[in-house]
Length: 151
Image 1: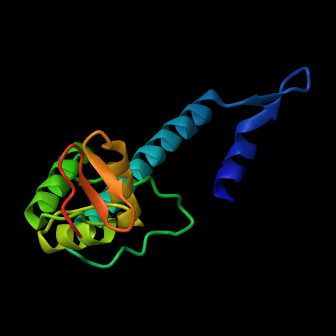
Image 2: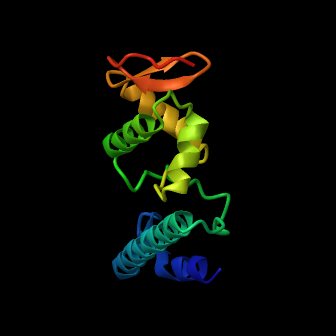
C-alpha cells in the first residue's frame, strides 16, 4: 500500500490533463527493483548451493519454496567423467551392468550423481556415449568392441 500511495502522491495532472510522474521517484523505484532482483538472485544461488551440498553428503532436500521452479541440477562431475567411471566399474565387475547396479556402485564408491531420477540420468549419459557402450537387453551395459562375457 505504501508504494501505491507514494506513486499517487508523485503523480499530478499537467496542463493537458496527462499524468506527470516525479522522475526522481521513478528512478528510485528502478534502483530498488534492481537491488531486490540482485538480492533474489543471490538467495537463489545460496539455496541451490546448499541443496547441492546436502545432496553430496546424503542429507535431506531443503524446504525451498516448491512453487519456485528450480533449475535443473547438474552433476558435479562432467558426464564424460561419469562415463569413464562407469566403464571402470563395468571392467572391474567383468560383466554387463544395468543402470540401477551402476548407480548403487556409484553410491558405494562415493561418486555423486545428480538428478531427481538418478538411474534415468545415468541412462542418458550412457546413451549419449553409445560409441563407448552397448546395451545388452536384459543384462545391462557393456563396453563396445569388447567380447560379451557369458551370462
